[in-house]
Length: 343
Image (cartoon, rainbow, N blue to C red):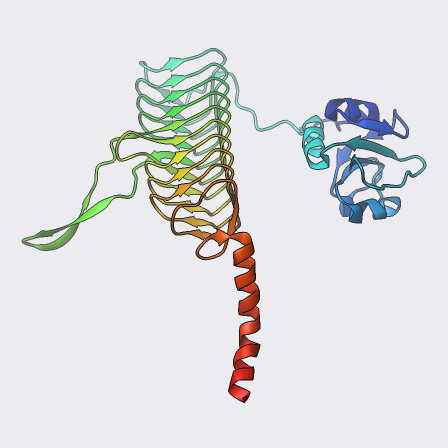
């Protein structure tokens, strides 16, 4: 089954993003695209001078333009001036988004829902889901196929759990959380202690009897893992956004609106302050304290505490200007060594 194409006028888009329109107000836009791939009747964005200069040669019929850029007007084309072109483009995308995968209202016949579970209004539970004893699902929650929610877990209102998600026992999620496919919340934390026995050395598993507490408006990417605490709780504050393939160890404490990019590993008992942004493939040691508002460059390795409100990079992570100076010096090292040997 195909869906009808989505079309909006330039005026509708400008009103939706809160922008100032110049050009044909009733011009029709049938989709969005990046600048170089845009086709006629599509909307693109212009957020820097490099693209503004090339606008006359762009095939797009309309553009969201950051205020203050010198972007020439072109006959028959639309410009919508906005304060933040990327943010406006994100808002415009919602107008053209196709329908997501659908799960019918109610409980699918193949789903297993324990009789002691409490379900809110308009809950959707898809094929082959498992909802354990004592689970609470808030209003308008959707569990797509093969989701597992184990004993005494609580979900707030308007949560969406995609295919293959596993939420283990006694975890708590707030309202409007989105968990992408195959993410696991509440798996055991990684804890072992060595012991010498008559048969030789062995590793004794440390029981992980804590839980995971996730705030409102949190989004967790595909194949991410959030481990339960050894004691008490691993905590993700309101508004956190966790990318695919991120590992967050047991007893970590994330503040509000922490953003972590893909393939990052966060060691256990680490504290990350509000508004921190962490680039992809970063590695953070256990028990580190990262202050609020930190920006951590991709690939950085954190070996200790980082004060808040600064930008860090490198191995080990250090203030970015210092890291750049050291990397620049390393580039010159082979030539310096050669010069030294030749003397």
